[in-house]
Image (cartoon, rainbow over all chains, first blue to last red; front, top):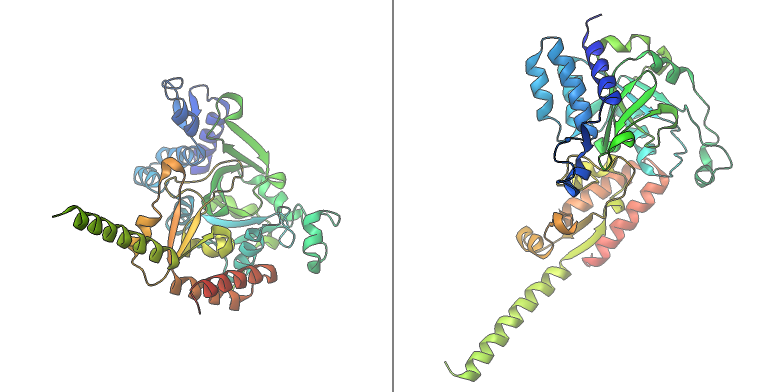
Length: 231
Length: 134
């Protein structure tokens, strides 16, 4: 196996497992002398290192360089990957009707995903939703009871476990992360050592709604029921 | 120039500065970022909901106290000088002409995607209209 995903996944795991030489970018800013010999990293840097490595190892040096110019906003990077490299966009939302943090962000992105097949203008092909529904006795549910209890769907999220590499973003790029076999891999920019990198099961990831974009070869195993159609 | 003349000039200059400042304040309205709805709706209008001098936000959920300066009948330059963006003091302002704010709010209110959200946007529209005397 010598695909983009193979190399990008390798980098994802390499950085996740070996980062004694790294420090979060904000921590380095606050204590520059202490961390002068450490390499600075943060959530978007982790993403860019893995994706540019994948392009570089598959002979696309132009794309490997290009992605670094798009790191200013995660949404621009995701759009570039979808538009220019035929990646597929997957909208995620644990409960479309009752976001556990009661924030309109999640219900509104769900509205746009279903109506326009877009997440912050990133084209979407799939939606994986309602995989961790808010219970009836939760205050967040009580606030918007008119929808009733959301029907649990675990089929779609389980189909994401076969994806070996993806790039995710939450709240329009406020936070960016990598995705592998059902888990979110992220960097925290104000820490160092064991807490610098973290992996979390997508089903309990606290940022709730967002998007995962995956290389074209990765989307084959996504459940048919997750296909999104608009218009 | 005699001393009384100097004092009069100083008073005149002070008065002009005071008036300019007061005029700018009455022609502006400071609102919170969230009063324009979730970022998924408002980003195109007022930018992202994290510091504009950073490429992304904090990896643990954090709210940023970004202020939206809605203005009318005053130059953008005057507004910017009244409310400067100062990263060192975490002062992040987004400047928004009143007309643009109302176009956006009317559009999203008509869209009526989510009942609660529509109510929030109607409240914001009311605040703007009241402040600018419409």
